[in-house]
Image 1 (cartoon, rainbow, N blue to C red):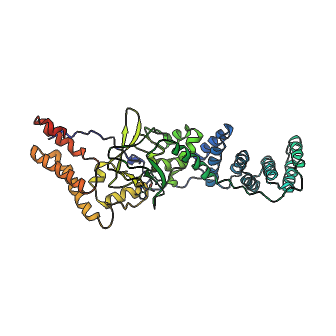
Image 2: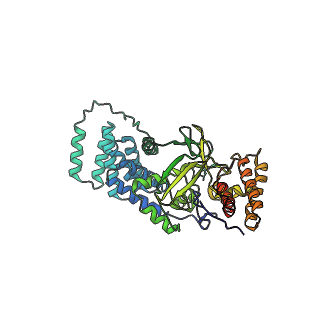
Image 3: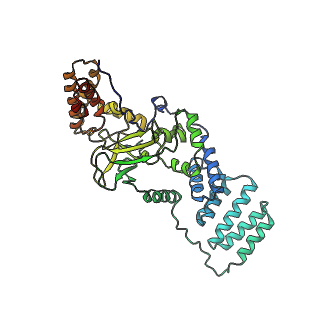
Length: 418
Ligand SMILES: C[S@@+](CC[C@H](N)C(=O)[O-])C[C@H]1O[C@@H](n2cnc3c(N)ncnc32)[C@H](O)[C@@H]1O
């Protein structure tokens, strides 16, 4: 029996070891423990004057837990620091509705007072200042604020000046986009029809080109739910806010687990940019984890035209080249909640593709049983031809290494290298 050399089994999927696939939703938790962690990171960002990140994180948790007035109260202050006056006033109003204690109410009145002052709603601001005092606010603080209000001539336009700053998610993602566009990349992340975001080539890429090499941000060796939460907990507020922007098709499993199972790579964990590449069963690029540098890499398998979407396969080699459309669809829909419509799965092509892939799968299974070198070589050539016919250009080495071993056994070094 020929030895089966596993040369590059570093190909990975942005998925999960099978043990962790959240196939059945757990019972809805009352409060996701992730919320406490996110709140602590938001406070941390605020204390470090990173108000955009604080705002993004407060927004994230207030969307999940909209009845908690504290998030609105805190976000109101972050909005004040960012001079988003209307948003600050709206958050303070929401906090007044939701917060029960006079301490929180006093804070909310004071924040709304400051926002209204900036919006030239002087009468409203004065009312809030009175309410601040009647809820136990400091007389000294109120005095300072009252002097500021007195200094504004009442003839000033009292109608609210519109706050035209973009929404917080836009604000954050624009900052991130800016950072990405400053980097020297050969792709851009933008909407992909029916697939949320995807990665598109920004210039002609040649087969073999390195598309990205990225260090994982949430490395998890042993992805138990506990380890995942611990890894997220260790992130900086900025990286956490980036992670929370990642796609999550398993929200019922918890915030961090859902993000992890939608995006994580089995060998490296969460990698921001590589997580945005969509799947195809006939991909034009592939993942390749580079152990020495501990970086996740994506490499072009074909030439890729400028503007073309770059696809990788989420399924590991034999699971994609040796499987039928229905098998792949089942796995992809369980793990990633989508129905693949790539060229191999397309209604017009899939029957032919299934036949080819079935034959490739049979060759893969029968090769270790073969002892006749010539037969092995013929089978390997057939498998690689079928892969090429099917437009599947990765993993030919799964077969070629067997062929190379036979050639080496016959001291045919030229063919061996070929
Ligand atoms: C790792 S993310 C890929 C990036 C994602 N599109 C985004 O917006 O961040 C995986 C998710 O992308 C979507 N996706 C990936 N490939 C797809 C495809 N071929 N067709 C439809 N949706 C796809 C699915 O929702 C899947 O759960």
